[in-house]
Length: 150
Image (cartoon, rainbow, N blue to C red; front, side, top):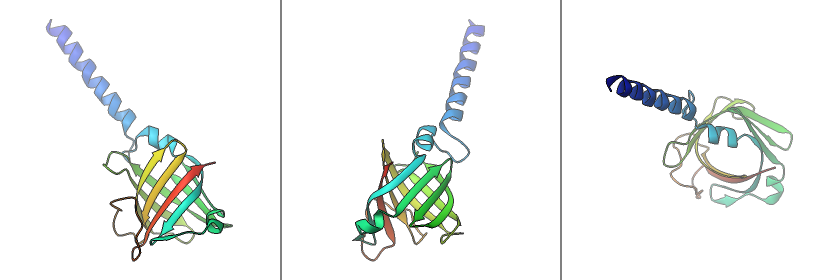
């Protein structure tokens, strides 16, 4: 009986460790979000500092996310960098760091919500605080954008 219990306990520990290894990578990303967020996105609507962005501007923006790297084009101007996800927080957290283009060396804390082919992100473009809600108000540097996969 002791051998059976010891074997069972070892099996439980192995399952728990395997579960942890599958759930988290080095940056605590859950693979389902890490994989699901990858792809090409276009903004359907966006609000910056409480002001809606014009449809003409939205039409020239594209976002590509691929394995921890992002690439944004506004017209023909690229902004590239890295992102990390932390879906374990109450509001799923994201950090975006520019490595090439206008945001090189800047890190923007954000929150995100992924629902199928819709991705909503609220960034703090001041780089100071992670947004507490999906809202952009006048007098802030909060950028709220809803992307659709294409």
